[in-house]
Image 1 (cartoon, one colour):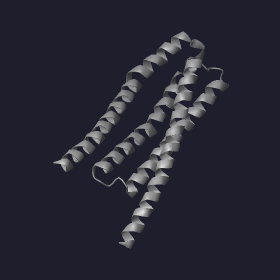
Image 2 (cartoon, rainbow, N blue to C red):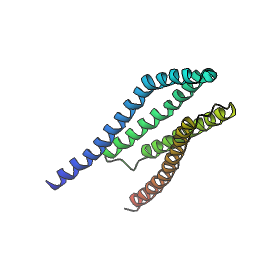
Image 3 (cartoon, rainbow, N blue to C red):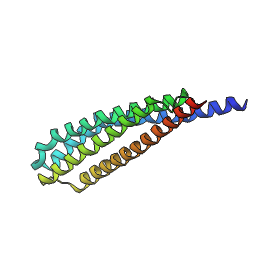
Image 4 (cartoon, helix red, strand yellow):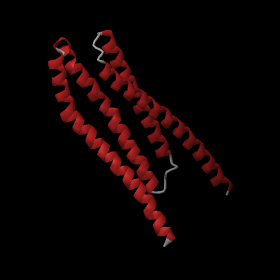
Length: 166
């Protein structure tokens, strides 16, 4: 009975995390479809001198969703590996590597956009602050994924050595 409860508890935690990932993905998709275009139109009305930036900014933001969704998928894969009792596997290490790359790609894209807006003197403080938050959060996620990848690799090495000695 205790074993069954532990199994249900483990699946419950990963189920909650998987559901959270799906909800985050849906929210970001809804923001991209509805809120971003509306905001771009409103900013174009408020600042007509910067209307030429409307589509480049939208394209830049939409480009960052590609690595975001790829990283979300890789995170889902890690949770599936945890469910199947293969958390410490090469696939998990590869997923962490891809998450790391995606996070750094997002940070670099926002860095380019941030500097581009500054060069064009189109730097709205609110937009820049949001860009900085996303850029630094992505960089932190990238560093965290790199650390986890390195730790997982060490665990895998120790696990393989132990399997050879038994």
